[in-house]
Amino acid sequence: MIAMGRFILKCLKCGREYGQEYRLTCEDDDSLLRAEYFEKRLELRDQPGIGRFHSWLPIQEELTTEAGPVTYKSEALARELGLSNLYIGFSGYWPEKGAFIKTCSFKELEAHPTMQLLKESGGKAIVLASAGNTGRAFAHASALTGPDVYIVVPDSGIPKLWIPEEPTDSIHLISMTPGNDYTDAINLAGRIAKLPGMVPEGGAKNVARREGMGTVMLDAAVNIGRMPDHYFQAVGSGTGGISAWEAALRLRADGRFGSGLPKLQLAQNLPFVPMYNAWQAGRREIIPEIDMKDAKKQIEETYATVLTNRAPPYSVIGGLYDALVDTDGIMYAVTKEEALEAKALFEALEGIDILPPSAVAVASLLKAVEAGNVGKDDTILLNIAGGGFKRLKEDFTLFQVEPEVTVRDSDVPLEDLKI
Ligand SMILES: Cc1ncc(COP(=O)(O)O)c(C=O)c1O
Image (cartoon, rainbow, N blue to C red; front, side, top):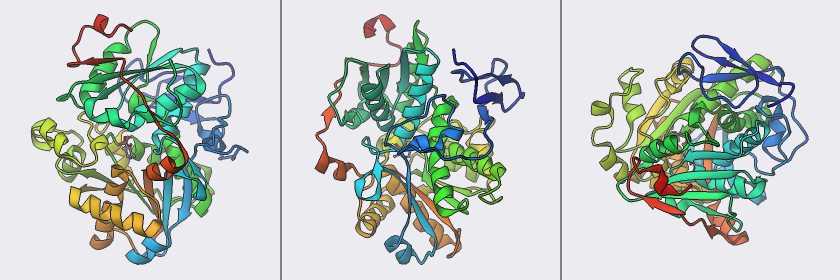
């Protein structure tokens, strides 16, 4: 158990408080827990990456990894769009800009604090589901730091499960046959996590994961000197949006970064856009028959497959709906063609390759400019949550993680997994 805490966990529904521990839910209800840190002012630590933001990470020991978010002011894309204060929050590999996330997405910002919290709370093995990028990040973190990870991935995610070092025995990859999607992987991971000795990673419920993603907002505020007026990101679960909002609430309370919360401007990719549909209809609830009819077929047709969660933390108290309401947010639905065009534009102008979800985010910024949803002198943060994969391959040899077992559906007998 953890000694002397740095924060408490508070239930956003009933207000019940818990000490510092690896806890995903309140004992009385299912709303999100939020960390309240004893440090109310952000005090940057002298660490190379995400560890700078230790003030608001739910761990004891400072992280020393070089992986961290990078913020820079755009010139070429900004000029093209006629924007005078466009900032890029870049999570990926781009050494020329000081970006050293070698699994090329902001999922690594979630993985490092989560693995550290697991260690500090005595856990030995963590279980998670992934559409690909999260699994890669946790596999890498496991190879670097030791704890076992059990990663359940749908077939479409397997090619994304490479890491920049030899896979270690601590990485256990479970793949699912075609026909299963990310949500099927979530369901199977949920069953495995109930086995003795296993700790569920928890997705959006995992505070360490949210704070890790929230550092993109913190880094931007520190670099710009204030919070941005707008925050653009592509979402699948929406956890990044929730995290950006929570980070902004802390920055507002800090007092040095402005008092207006950044307007969340979030995008999904067509035809699978359940949160966009629910938000457009003004609903807290996602109604599957309306908002994601023929979900599995829609998911197969999407360009950015990692943005396809059928059970996102949208309706839950403290979830994405609340974040959108509180920030007067906007959602976008982007086509594959729009995303590909945006990708080509960004890469040509900014000079770095980006992953499909980031292309969806760029496309939503183009739409926002066209619709007048941002002012030309507004301060805008565009979260490029994944990029630099081509750049990474120039410097590193990548290793594919091989599945230990492949299963047909999420109801398989757990004995078959030979865990
Ligand atoms: C690069 C990238 N961007 C965006 C997302 C969406 O993340 P979320 O919906 O959890 O905020 C993901 C999810 O895997 C991702 O890998």
